[in-house]
Length: 112
Length: 121
Image (cartoon, rainbow over all chains, first blue to last red):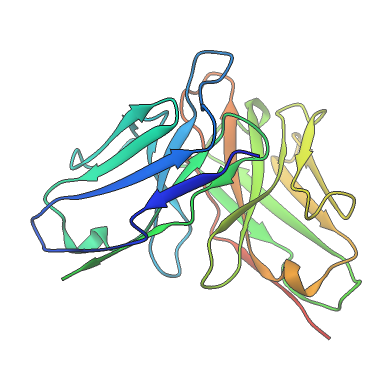
């Protein structure tokens, strides 16, 4: 199974400042079709997860450009610039390159 | 607008059964692989099972293999998860989500609101 790890597990951010979350996979996420199926999800309490970024760096429809994804192979980063109050919650990376699909443990983001 | 509506959750006894449903609208269900993901309250996300768009290829987490069965009815735009031999550790909120899809570059962009399954005597 591909193990997903995230750092940090907790981040306290000042409004208007930036935050970065790292995600590492235990093996390459490059699929045989050439795509890298690394997604970033955001979840607020009591809500289902919401897709932010798919295939490393593609923002899903309606996601603010304050969110950006980067990386390749086994190392990936989600960056949030100009953090706003609605950005609090838990951020998960997940891989859909192989089965079982696996998720990172989540990074809790709070506002200072 | 895509909508995924789960139902069928509730209280079950250990060793019992439940069948979850996920009724879909707003995207091409018949072109889409579908996945069940669960989350223990206060915990992280755990993948449970995936079925391809035709329903002829399925995958299961080791923790549920042999006890859970994923299926779909494309004529009804509905995904199912039949859960047998339930255990206390199956207690979680169960979400259905769109997985890889023909003609779509994104995946896991649509999620249901979740249905709570509680396994307890």
